[in-house]
Length: 285
Ligand SMILES: *[C@@H]1O[C@H](CO)[C@@H](O)[C@H](O)[C@H]1NC(C)=O
Ligand SMILES: *[C@@H]1O[C@H](CO)[C@@H](O)[C@H](O)[C@H]1NC(C)=O
Ligand SMILES: *[C@@H]1O[C@H](CO)[C@@H](O)[C@H](O)[C@H]1NC(C)=O
Ligand SMILES: *[C@@H]1O[C@H](CO)[C@@H](O)[C@H](O)[C@H]1NC(C)=O
Image 1 (cartoon, rainbow, N blue to C red):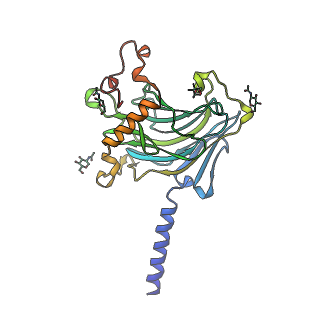
Image 2 (cartoon, rainbow, N blue to C red):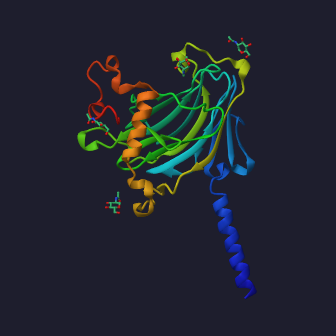
Image 3 (tube, rainbow, N blue to C red):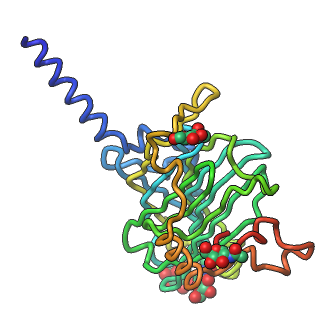
């Protein structure tokens, strides 16, 4: 009897411990570069990336995923962050890789960050959309999410959709649906293009620049292991998620009021004609 109780207690402790430890940067991520500039703090709950004149820093997830809904909370470098880029994205490997990007382009004190998004399919990007935010992303943590399922990719900021990239593979537009991806985050210097197209350079007297990350969640994403996906879709609400009419209205609000750049409107850039996906629906692509 005593051993049964002990066993139950241990089991309860282990499951509690497991669930508490489930959002732990030490367990979920590897530092990939930066020579000590990527730091995991608070028992794994907080990740900080820093950038100075010598180097930036970055991490990648230990797990690979083929579809998922990934959430991360970010607080961006404050003050004069012009020239810096903070990234948080999904990517597969190789020259024909797929990628789903959030990049945060820094700015002079008081001037707005830009959220730069892109989707790569089969090694080809050129699908940029950029947005301002409706809050100061350096003042507090906000949640940035990537929903990636067989029907659609949706970028969310605090649960508000800002961009949708639908699967219209049947119409000949490549869609990322067969290469597993990892989650990456980094902070680096991109003052050749990031702020006002490269006009504003990084001011190194403000270094180190620091971006913070917390509450990484993969929401029971489909894990890719040993060459196959562990996924069964029945229990995963995100697997069949698409925009409902409320979200559609929010998306239109963002695109009307906060969109800075949309490749689908950039006629000069595509003299041979806009990319095929742009002709489907300019509001939702
Ligand atoms: C920086 O601020 C300027 C001035 O408000 C703005 O034009 C620009 O879009 C902002 N963001 C970036 C990344 O350049
Ligand atoms: C760089 O930042 C420092 C400290 O904020 C400031 O004194 C200096 O004028 C800045 N340099 C430039 C080129 O803006
Ligand atoms: C997901 O589940 C539904 C039924 O719940 C099924 O019709 C569908 O084919 C499944 N999709 C995949 C990709 O397994
Ligand atoms: C695009 O989608 C929006 C929102 O659903 C809709 O109002 C609009 O009519 C669509 N445009 C086209 C060209 O299908």
